[in-house]
Image (cartoon, rainbow, N blue to C red; front, side, top):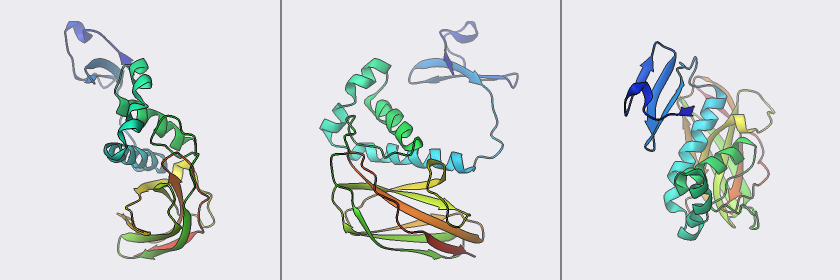
Length: 208
């Protein structure tokens, strides 16, 4: 993506041109990018990216004011908002196999939650995941990994959801829109300071 001034000899331009390039505006800045049509919007990688962006967008409002303010310098340097600085850095961290954090320090100084009993219950088009915690500690959210392969290795590319803690000792999540098959899951918890727990045991859910 390239930012531009007065694209197409005008103050603003939008839309695609010749099926090759797209003109648009983001945060008040004009830009131009290549025109592309995704061949499959539901690849593992695309699902993983959407999961982390959804979590970061939803969780920002609940981030404490001092933690939000810690992103101000990075935001000013990049000429965008504190939320954008928060999202950019934490999306990169999750994509590298790490946990995000509420503030920019990401010092991992708190204690990881301890995972307890867990289950995956299959149904029509969905699997219901239940995860208990024996120690909540500084828990912030869960990374939910899914695969069609038995004994799979958790990775950034197979994260299908990031589930915020709700204050309860057990969190329940419905993984919906699934075709009939056997799905394998693993789950890990992370703290508000970015400390990631070890993933729990593999769970199996059969979708009909």
